[in-house]
Length: 401
Image 1 (cartoon, helix red, strand yellow):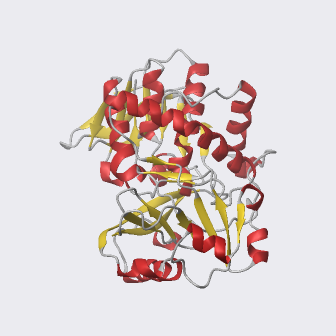
Image 2 (tube, rainbow, N blue to C red):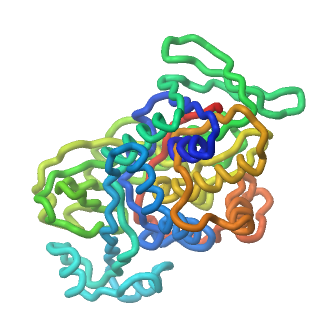
């Protein structure tokens, strides 16, 4: 999210510095890269936000690739969601957007799918991007090309405010252990699950997720499989990304656990039994930034000059393009500042026609940070949403300009 916003702001002519405590913590290096507003079963404003971002991603990625000279691994692969009954399938929130599949259709789309799944939905409009190996590197290079500065290993310790309560700077500790005050009048807080450590009033908490990858034969699996509790994301070279556990009780406890890894192995066996024999390549974990309704926190914060782009839970990669556009517009409308700390990502422009002022206002209102206290109309409905995927967050990363 930070890199997407830094890229957006730099493309608008702003001077941006990205402050990153530890690059390896970033959600972009942890998530599976699914672009799945429909397969995720999103609803209400969050579904609309995801759909609008999905529309922008091809153009957004094309610009990143042109600016970086690197491919991002975008694949309109489609996503299959299997179900145990027709009733369960037809009750899925986004079923009207998908193509119903019977058992024969499931086997055609996912050769070798487990026997427990008689029906499914194909969301051909959803897809994936190779975020861990390709998108993040391309974003970094594109940002550097636009003049974005980076301070890796810089931990933000506190936000400074002036006598009027407006943002005046950030206190940080550099990689060499030196404490500094970085003056700025604008910043974007895009540090994922860690955001509330700097702004405690944010209704945000970490949900740990464990993942692994397997090396399968090339083209053994073409579609993403999004099962309950486990998903399989095939890359072009045959690598299969498998995720993800959901451990809200773990807090920020790092490391793999036997229970978590057994959960993933059980999911693989249920969804694609043949993959249980494929050799494991890597195992990792990360922390999703979750809010009470699983929607992001966007726009102005309680501190004048501090903007929010956090709380994206499982949908950070999907929502990066639209979030960057929204935050870029917020800062442009505010105008007049010389320093813009951004989080950990960027995105210039969006694909096709931009959001209208009314659409921007509506999305910012729907995802304001204090919506749980005030309950403004148009917020995400509070009904439970199917827990079928995991998207993991990023660390603190501020960017002054």
